[in-house]
Image (cartoon, rainbow, N blue to C red; front, side):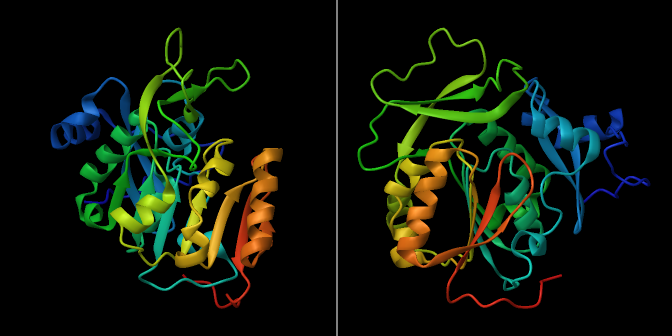
Length: 289
């Protein structure tokens, strides 16, 4: 059941914490939330509030949602504005992290394929779905690191040290190959199972309809694209949202966009340079509310 939104306005100056009785009730309902690595937060979107599992350790996304209830986008409509999405839209969320976009779309009634390599984030995603069971049938979680044809196991995912600030624990950095190891790692680090996006699309998901794709894999985008050409040749989503802050990955996205008929329509402000690519035959429309 969705909780009532706190009777106050969320902003960068507000602070709100779930009361102890709400935390106890959530932990009784979903025992995995009692894991010391997780904590309960209340997320607020244009669709209302919901309970969300966040990381207890230092993590930018968890801290902002825990304190302010919000993250990058407040609604499905705002993701692709000024375009429209069908009410039964499908999101492919590659690099789901703690699931802000996954849950935003599930809350709106859309189908979601969520790919997340970091096991600690997978546990948080599962706990959030436990807390919001009516969404579980809409979300398919793929617990894999995505790579290209030449990417070789093993793969590990480690927390982003964020320039030594050590405050971005949920941001998983994927490393694959014979030298990939968690040995000597002081931050969170776990092994990840390797797949290609092409294999997921064709073998495990039987080429689903996908309307919008969000990709945020912290510098591993070129490998994901190399192993995911069916995304462009068969699935052909209308919209792609990609992080373009790394020069190498920005170049890969620009090459793929030019090759497959996508144009850049919007670059959001901020250091991540989140960019909306639109398929050339996807006309603008009325924003979905």
